[in-house]
Structures are given as C-alpha cells and as structure tokens.
Length: 181
Image (cartoon, rainbow, N blue to C red; front, side, top):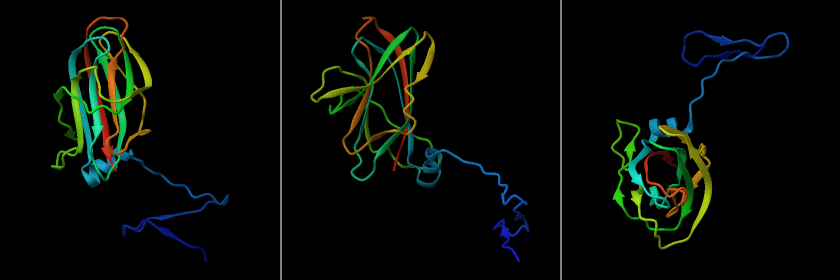
C-alpha cells in the first residue's frame, strides 16, 4: 500500500504518482515583498518628484533601523526629458525635503525606519560610490533592476542622482520600493 498525499483542507483531494514516478502539482508563488507586506506590514514606497539639476540627488534613503535590513526591491526613475541617472551608495546623513514612506499594507500603521529626503543637496559629509547608471527617454521611466539584491544595513544609504552631463535641469520622478526584514 502506498502513501496518499491529502490536500490538508479536508476536501478529499489527494495527489497521485503516475507510472513514471512523477507527482503532478500546481503551485502559485508570490514575491517576498508581498509576504512581508501581508504578514509584517513592513513594505514601503518612497516617491520623489522634483526639478533636478545636474549632479543633484532626486532621492536619498538611509536605513535607520537598529535591528532590520532594508531590502530594496525596485527603483523606478524618469522624467519629462531624456535623463541620465546614477545610483550611489553613500555615508552622507542626507538633507532636503523629508519624504515619508507609504506602507503598502494599508491595514498596517507601521512606520518605515528610514530617513528619506528629496531634492538632496549634492554636497555630502561622507563618501560615495557608484552602483549603477541608467538612461531614460523623455516621458518614460526605467528600472535600476536591483530586484531584492540591494540590501541596506543599519545606517547604510543610497541616492539617485542626475548625472553631471548634460548640465540641464530635469523634471525627475523616482519611486523606490523596499521592505524591512
């Protein structure tokens, strides 16, 4: 007699192994950020829309949590005109207009443990290093494509800056999506 795998919900469904020894299954997967948003209420977006001069930052994000990493899931950036953007890591403290995170779980009242600023002053009191470059067409947005691979520990920071050349001012938009874990 074989082992029967039951559905676990008491509906009488069971799985069967075919003559080749294969078990046919159907699965649905969801992203990690969806799980964290649902179970912990710790997934957020931060959005910035400003006129950005060459070399200035459109958004600055610093993880201020003493116990959790901030995992960056996505960074979308674009503008009204062609833009060339840089993603930087930074040890700056940040300054500018305060941007509050929006909790993606609308049933949660958790606040993001992050310092976030828009229209960041280019001068910083720390060191910076480039992570990636991105070019966007006029009236479009593109992704930096970090997909959960950019992890900010305590006091780690990133910023999205407009490249120094061309030296024009761009009406920039940026949305960063991330979660704490």
